[in-house]
Amino acid sequence: MATKLFFLLILLSHVASSLSEGCHPQDKKALLQIKKELNNPTLLSSWNPHTNCCDVSSWYGVICAPSSNRVYSLLFEANDELSSTFPPSIGNLPTLEHILIYKLPKLIGSIPQSITKLTNLKSLTISETGISGAIPNYIAKLKSLTFLDLSNNHLSGKLPPNLFNLANFEAMYLQNNKLTGSIPSSLAKLNSSVVDLSHNRFEGDASVFFGFAKKTETIDLSWNMLAFDMGRLQFPKTLKRLDVSHNRVYGKLPEDVTNLEWLDVSYNRLCGEIPKGGIVQAMGKKSYLHNMCLCGSPLPSCKKYM
Ligand SMILES: *[C@@H]1O[C@H](CO)[C@@H](O)[C@H](O)[C@H]1NC(C)=O
Image 1 (spheres, protein in one colour):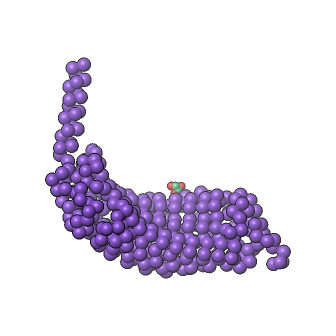
Image 2: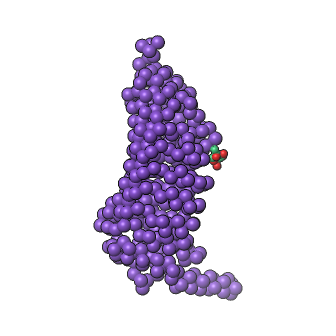
């Protein structure tokens, strides 16, 4: 009993000392610099230099790893007062693994190069902000990155071809930007669960996202200007949801569509008979309307084209 108590006391003193140690001075310095770069927004009024940045619920949006007391996650969301360019000092939080910046419409400027210092970064979400400019090719230096969500911003320009040197990529959300150009063929290496490039201005071939051996489950390429032969695609065997609507996709629908759980190919230049089976007919006409000469259930029969 006495020894148990002894161990408990040791354990408690450890917990207490790690709490009083608090925030790593280097992290606190970087966080206060970020606050300054963001023009001291009211969102960060809890970032008080005299308190412990690692205390749960003391500093807004800061989460530390309990074992090391180092900052591993930053989470800013839903604030339309914060008005600033992207804070470069974010690169001075070397243990950061997750950045989630969501719904800050007055956060503007481009993604700073200092972000490449975050070699432990696993997920990067900057969504529904005012950030603009190109997706920088230096994002590919973030070797630990598995989740990238840059959706709903004002990003423009082409996709950097080296972007998907990132071996462990799990999901890529780039929808609702102003991205242009063709899809780099190097992206054939990408093997992520989700690819969403919808509502951009991409052109040309996007067949690199397909291929039997990939583990992709969702592909959304809708609302672009993509043009490729759908009949030649080999779907990933894991593919469940496919949206290529509102493009210039041509050819016929491959038999593989019968393995999907959801499909929209409307507003394209497809032709030929719609394969039968799976959810294909149950999706209803709206998934197939406005093509060149697509026919058969659920559209009218192919007789008129024979
Ligand atoms: C994609 O990843 C899955 C799961 O890790 C793996 O089995 C498959 O071989 C990979 N495919 C390609 C084309 O790299």
